[in-house]
View 1 (spheres, rainbow, N blue to C red):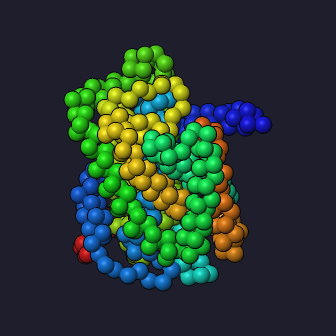
View 2: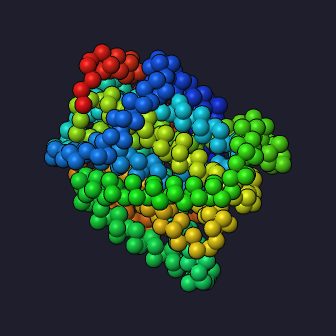
View 3: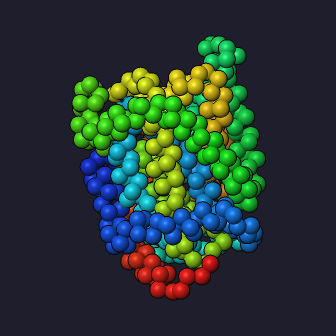
Length: 464
């Protein structure tokens, strides 16, 4: 049965992430960048001012909404996860070091794509029966493109419901169990034979915690993410920078492998990864898995923000992709490549490869801290994607489905702790690609609205 699922998924995955999809992702990002005058570069200082500055605001959000900072923390909680840790490791293992270069390319264009998604989500959002702001691709399709495109909104929501169980939950729990078990094994607290029992315990505990938070509603989600995200990001960045500094002499060679390997992967991987296209697709697909630019999912959280300025909230989209991929994913790549840990090119890899980069530099004791950081990353992602899935389910059915969905979503953590990593990643990657298609069609068709909103925003005198 599993073999059949693998074969079917491989066929769909190859189609979804084939040349047309990559051209579409890169093409839409490039088109939006050109039409906005490369706003991600031109207005980068302003974007940082408008986003990082919100960290220090003590503003309370109205009922049914989040503060702009809580919204970005919720979105970041979903993006800064296993894509940054296991995803980067998998991209390097399958696509070679050159995959990192293509991650950067997708991130550069993705900044503008995500800016557009967030701007559209806030502009076309609405309030549900509970008085909460709801928005995202399904709503900007519905309210921006009209009834004749309703099928596209439903298609996105259906893909979204299926995607959250793999991308948002199972792969995250798998990373948590890998990190915890690595730490326990390093300190001889469990044996290899006890890992299965440990996985079950981890899955049950996560199920309970996720259920408590998600069933508490949007305010509880916001309160958890605004505290968890800054802590986990700072902890991970400090640990990763330490690896880079200790192995600073290897950095020139690492960058050479990244840039040269992007176009000549065989020369860097010893012929194991010989396809330029493999390197590019893995870099782009895992980059999107990490920063979600093109998926549209992050805009679902931003639509909850208590703001009347769509473009200003859109700046958070630029900030997110920059922080997620340019900073954190790059640091993960440096941890793996400059630490000198052996990489089995052509074979799937996950969080264990990143953990090896840390332990080979610091020693086994660091596995405790890496386990904490990775658990925070993955757990926050489960929370963020729980909100996304609930919004997609609510759009298809009604708000009555939200709590039952949250319960089912929480229970998936038990499955995620015990299944095969490679299959879960492949299925998650496939559904990510399926979500990209309806979202990018909508963003492209509504790009005129984005350009109009940008033009109007910069015509008005700036007011803080």
